[in-house]
Amino acid sequence: MLELGGKPSAQAGEGLIKDTTEASFMTDVVDASREVPVIVDFWAPWCGPCKALGPALEAAVTAAGGKVRMVKVDVDQNQMIAAQLRVQSIPTVYAFWQGQPVDGFQGALPPAEIKAFVDRVAALAGDGGLAEAVEAAEQMLAEGAAVDAAETFAAILGEDPANAAAFGGLARAHLALGNLDQAEALLNNAPAEMGGAKEIEAARAQLDLALQAQKAGPVAELHAAVEAAPENLQARYDLALALHAAGQVEEAVDQLLEIFRRDREWNDGGAKTQLFKIFDALKPQDPIVLKGRRKLSSMIFA
Image 1 (cartoon, helix red, strand yellow):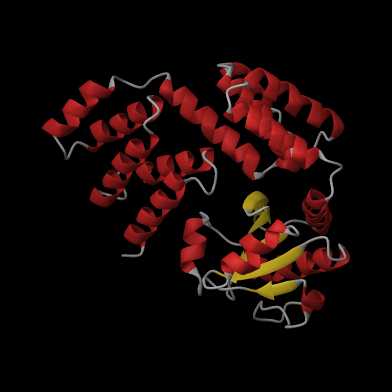
Image 2 (cartoon, one colour):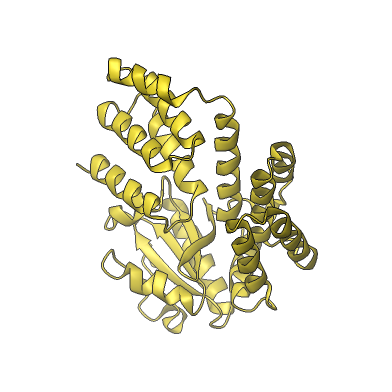
């Protein structure tokens, strides 16, 4: 259990609960999550809500009997991890499965919701084949078979209505088919228990980007405007939107990073917000995400 300062005891949860550092994060979280789901608790000794959330999470993880593990990250001591995973407030909790963040929430929750979250994460390792079905549907979507993917995601939701991966996948399939209104309606009616799930947030980010694409200007004209006036950050931002709409995602990220380098507070931090929207819409391990986050972090902590 947590002591007054917020740190768990060395034997908490019989080895199921541990601290990690930037040096061991890959082993303790990413690699370990390929065998069993791992819940990551981002906390700090000075954080009051963390002291309430930590023990409740530990208790729920321990009660799960080895179906899930818990790793704690002190954000004061591991700022790079927190920055890369877009931890903007604490407590923040992520769940990792098969090397990727798949669920999460921010702030303290009542015990019943914490238990429901841990139970949902623990079920990832044994869900009657639904994980494989989600993976197959994702492959269909990646190959352009959006109709088949949508049907598969819908079938999964018929078996498990609370499956956030399938729900987000169905929304993204609608987006791939150009059904923006259907995708928006679906996401607006997402079940409350899915709130904060990474798959839902990824689909929302893709929807926002698709809506922006409808208003994007011509790339050539915006390129010319930026070349004529490099200090015109609004023109550069508009260029980034147009580049993303044209499928030139890495180029769009580069333009947004340049805005942040020139003036990180421009338009209430609009460049950083747009960067995170693009990162959220992509897979966490996408090279564009990894490279972009690394560059952004180097600017933030320079």
